[in-house]
Length: 457
Ligand code: ADP
Image (tube, rainbow, N blue to C red; front, side, top):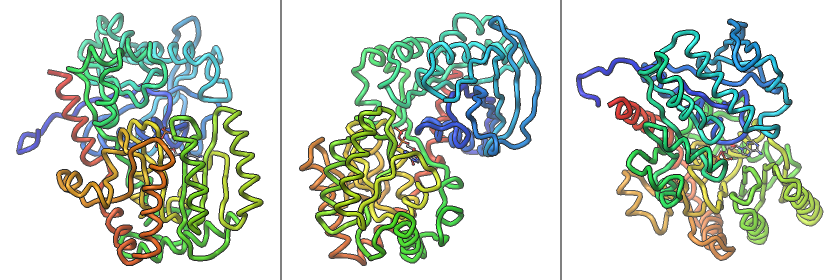
């Protein structure tokens, strides 16, 4: 690829059930939008087929309008069209009410998404579109892979190749195995995670077509120089000033003491994957060290949510001026936390890629992470990973630890906080440095294009 030969544009159709910012639960939603935008920027045609959820935030859809209807699966399916972050999105609304459930997940998901995948292929067939690539994601749109190979490939869409991306192997292993079989190419979202899962029976027979491509973040969506949710616009040039203003605004907003203390931010789904016991330990350790802690997190499991409600009550009474747990999903607040934190902690037990640490760096917050999956591939410890970073053409950019125990967290967090207290000039230059690293889609989008081309060989 490259040189003087200009590749003809490709037509890529994503079939997905999450998309930021209209219907996002986790990283999958971010990736569908930002990967699509990056590939479109390279001059290719990208469309997205998406369920029309009743709970969707339509204010972020431009030129939303009814397009046509078709009949399939014993029901009328209305097709709506609109632009999301500059991307063309076709919204399918089965009139049997399948997506009038008030939520993205949680109601007969297997049936609903299976129906949606089938309807999406039917729609492409009926309007006579011949994409080069059909890109499906996780267990939820995995059925596209085998439905296409078993049925639609024979009806004129024979040009298309199937690319299947695993964002998290935890969910829906049966679907994933089956899609791995039928996909022309399969990916997951970092090289290290691809190695970590290579022994999984859903993956191991298919290693020859399985690749790890790191996710990026969209620098326009995450941009401290152009962000309505933070008080002072900043770049790496005025990072100290920008982050100071954001820290004060955050302290003000959450009722924390407005003093200059190291502030540790945590932004996460509260699930076992994210290292709950390590998160709890880190909160106490940061407070012991005289720091402040802000946690923004929501738990799908009510027992875990309860547990954190109790912890919040305890902390708010014992350390009310230094700790705040906000137990909800709040995108605007997340921006202020990224900007106002000195450190963002990501102590995951496993992490396919992780976007939190990448956003943190974009906002000049130093990642403190466990060395697993994509965290290993993106965070290079200032004390231990100089050579590994250099091999990637990078400078070290954070603090990390190996074991999934509290001693590990202490090892990384203590060094991080000590650096803040004892070497502030150096710490500030580290903030500037991480902001200047490129964790956008520039590189990964080229890797995906290469993969798309290889799928067509
Ligand atoms: P996962 O997809 O496993 O949840 P990622 O790190 O890939 O983890 O993506 C998490 C994304 O969700 C990040 O953009 C992060 O900022 C966001 N996020 C997580 N929890 C919350 C929350 N409670 N409120 C707002 N944003 C959140």
